[in-house]
Amino acid sequence: MPACSNCGGRICKGDVKCFTCEISLVKVKSKAEANLERFKLGVTIMFFICLALTLASMFFDFGFSFGKCAAATVILHFVKMSAVQMLESRGNS
Ligand SMILES: [Zn+2]
Image (cartoon, rainbow, N blue to C red; front, top):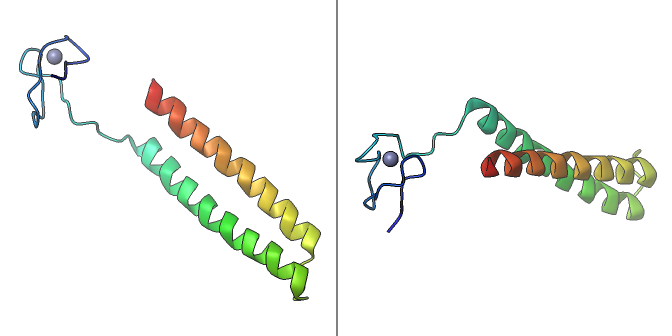
């Protein structure tokens, strides 16, 4: 049986608000969280594009040097990691 995080009262499955204290049980995503998730998705897509370019630059010569692509991939990886960490720290609090 799940309990209300606010008052500790019992909650029925499917309830949208606590029967005792009437706090909303539906977790609403804040705008900042939604933006951060969108940002994370964008960075993830760019990361894979850079990764593909890095791999491709090892075999083909199309103007991008391997070093530049690898550096961009590493930077995007760290940006992605920090975005994930920000999302996780928000989720825990
Ligand atoms: Zn409650």
